[in-house]
Length: 204
Image (cartoon, rainbow, N blue to C red; front, side):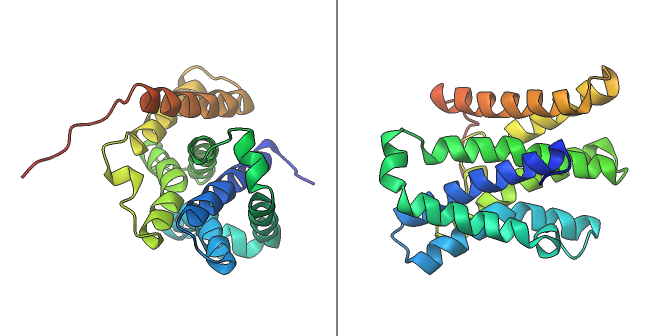
């Protein structure tokens, strides 16, 4: 079904962000249609902006209807089994962190595949990881995490730097680098939140 590791990572990221978006929408008590829309934009928002910036159009989800089906099935399953998922203590935060790690790597690798500057690749990874959540929060009338005290985009940048070092400096296998960086981003975000680490607020 999936031809390479990148496709598997992208599908897993789509699932993680679809669940994140679904639970965010249910917390705001949206109707079913609203929940599906939020799940969709959370899953594909970052990738859509990335593809438009580098001119890779039609964007990924328009070329592959499977992505839309994955989002639909995941969101409906999350709605149906919401009570069971809560009993397993699987939270919005964990799915959001997982999606962040998975999609950051997808964006980084796409930039590399297009032969772009390493700094631009890191920017694309950050956009892919963060912007779906930004659009979700804006639609839900919430200040996006990236603009609050919580360290969010910085984790993506950190992961991007490590990824490029592993590939370009230390010649680590691409698939190994992907999984190491995904784990690093998720673990770093969990530690940052648990330790309540943050940047200082700007005051006027």
